[in-house]
Image 1 (cartoon, rainbow, N blue to C red):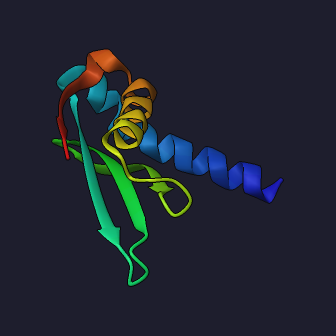
Image 2 (image 1 turned 90 degrees about the horizontal axis):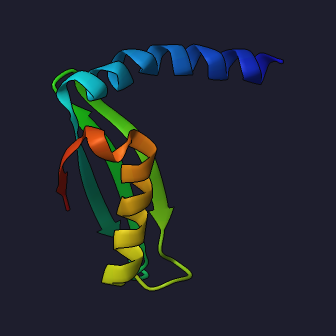
Image 3 (image 1 turned 90 degrees about the vertical axis):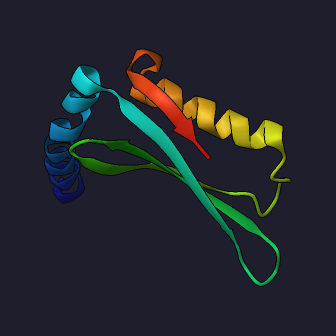
Length: 91
């Protein structure tokens, strides 16, 4: 029950950001890094005038960080925020 209450609190706090996406749009921004074992990790954020929101993160430890795999991750993020809300994608 405690976890559900916290999840609801976070979702309510994020509503301020996601409502802005409908009115003003959102930029999908990705950032990645490679650890000392040459394993890739890619983060995706939704950025608007009101601020940035973490959308997802994916490790490419077990699969290759190919252009196809990265574009699939970005397309999932675009689908999550709503394609009509996206004004640009920055990688």
